[in-house]
Length: 106
Image 1 (tube, rainbow, N blue to C red):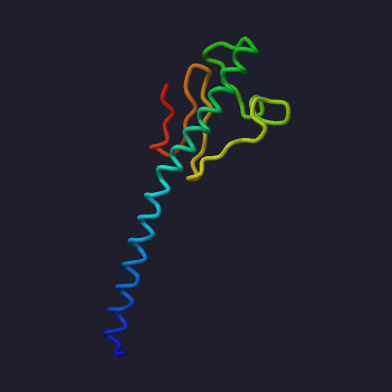
Image 2: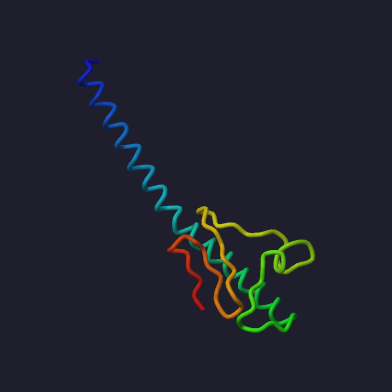
């Protein structure tokens, strides 16, 4: 194989791999978003229960240890499958993920 042909072959293989890899990311992005939104929903339910049982005000802010752990509302902290970070927020505001497309709607 000539050097020119090797370079062309390498380019085609690389381009094909990148296209396949990008397609896989899109395929899983929807699944990851759905799973993340379910996690956010669990956090919201736990936060609501914490607020109700503790007679919290709308502007009270729970911390993770209020909601998560043995004997708490959620046994283990949920994680975003896409690597986003969760913010619990005050009682009156939905929890959020740092991945912009992962939004919990009321």
